[in-house]
Length: 432
Image 1: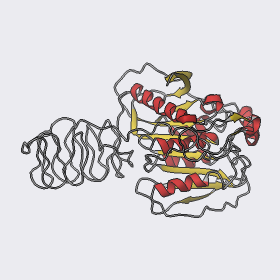
Image 2: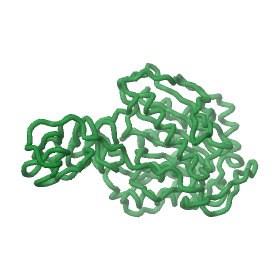
Image 3: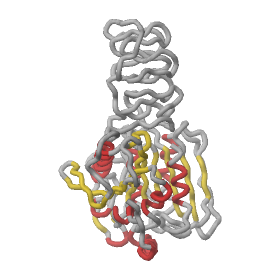
């Protein structure tokens, strides 16, 4: 479904962002914890809340989808009870393990040998249905293991993955359960899903000519405070889906969730729970590449993208936060690396720079193993040319990048029709 935006509506919305869109005037939520806080509506200037977090921490996930090990491989000596011998054995459930691997019911003979029901011998090689050994091998049906990505240094095989692995860098697609199915959903606004007894809604856009045998990238795009899912999907600001719809060229499924009271306070982790349930629904309905799921948002939607990275690193590969902050909280209980991109204006009057945005960026720079950097200083007063920086020494496959511009609170510095933000965001997300 092709989306179009009304230019006068976009310009009007941009003009009032500093008064209504951000929600950054509320106190930072900090780490999620028990109890949480309750926000009260503060009119056009955003919402206000007390310091202390946003609830019980939300849904943190279990860290990837384990596999039963897939189809048995050929050869190898049968062992007793699946005892692993030699170099680099593997555990029940298809967990990858260093150089070479073993499997339930078989004993590898010597370094990297394969047992009945296990994986093939050698560093990083694998049999259909098993788990590839080595750095970041991947398997259909689960997240890519380690930092090597879906294919990684060890190559990928059909059938499983390492327990607890997070989305890897690059490599082969990891098809979701919806591949090969005829979906019951279709593109459209105001679709609903029940989450913990609450009815939550979303707008969905499939590529024209959707093919249920092709795994698509998925981008979850969050609206700003006092905005709506329709503002995002119909191009109420910038262009549809913050300008990414046009750039995706039919390669991506887009979804715009609707926040409670048009915001993302994430009280008690409710919005993370909604995001997780929504992604699971879409994975079951459509053919999605589970190793390429992304979040993006502006203002409070940017803060929700940060919360998504914190609580759903087992699901999300990378996020893009535009002029955001910590307003949706951050569950730090089981975080793993997530690639992180940020844009922010030096004259932001809503989510004041650098108090907002930069701490969340630096948080993920640390998680991703990057060397600390100073923020770049933009010189173009029009906002049309940003100053960008890529953090150095990050964990391979988990880059961190920031683009800073001279300007106020907007996702489209320089003007909606000519902003550099969509191209920079697409370049960052589509590298995976």
